[in-house]
Amino acid sequence: MEIKITREKKYSIIVNEEELNSLIGFLDSQYTPIEIVTKCNDGSTLTTSKIEEIINFENSRFRKIEVIEISFGKSYSQGGNVEFNGKYHFLETCNFTVKDNDDAKALKVSKEIEARFEECKTWYSFLTKFPPSLVIPLIYFLYWIPRLC
Image 1 (spheres, one colour):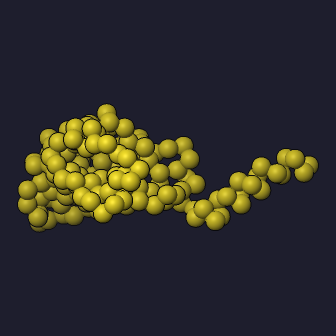
Image 2 (cartoon, one colour; image 1 turned 180 degrees about the vertical axis):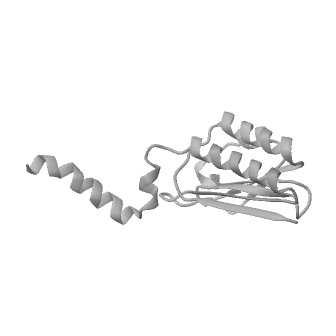
Image 3 (cartoon, one colour; image 1 turned 120 degrees about the vertical axis):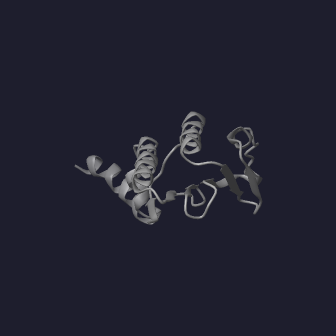
């Protein structure tokens, strides 16, 4: 029996080098090989198996990384992917898919990935669930309420 677990989180996260290395190390211990694909705002795609190459990449304004996708596993039925999408300025999403024939392993991996997403969540992540056209007037309104009273 094959199990497929997919989750999408729509909130802002900040992932540093240590957390990215830790996530890739965990995924590598469960499934091999690992492939990292980055998509840049100029339309280029960078593919590697070593996170150091992505970390050392000059992330200039004209060739900024917008999406990092980590694929793991060697077959269609065992493996998956984790995607960090910062393409949109206000609403970032991160999602993952885990596929395996072993239900316990798939649940373990998906819970670990989800826990790592929660650890990277920012304090202001609840604001990213709303469109900027709603948040900016709300902040402005909350700023002026004490001054009017």
